[in-house]
Image (spheres, rainbow, N blue to C red):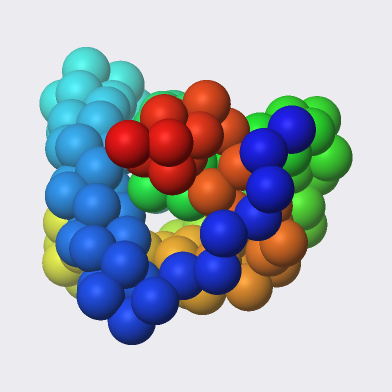
Length: 147
């Protein structure tokens, strides 16, 4: 395992930009799967929300662990920490979203702010909890440190 290299403010900014760009791809997966489920199924809002967010999280975790946080931490432990965030986030947003949907608020108007809230919450949770103490410990970080 590589030695942990502390982040400087410029590196932290680059990390935030990388997280944003990679999260945009996850957002496309979440939005795209939500639209497909909206158009092709008669599932309720909460089920469409849960399915689309799970697909997005799996994609986003995989990319950001490797490229943004450059973490070599234990994947099952990291996924459990990610799951702890979503044990709260998914039920609360699914429940509130379903209430809004039942009150004739367009599902897309519910999904967009939910995705933005997820983006901010996810970054903070992953940075401060999931990858805390393990940033810059994977092979990509090793290569950069030796060059």
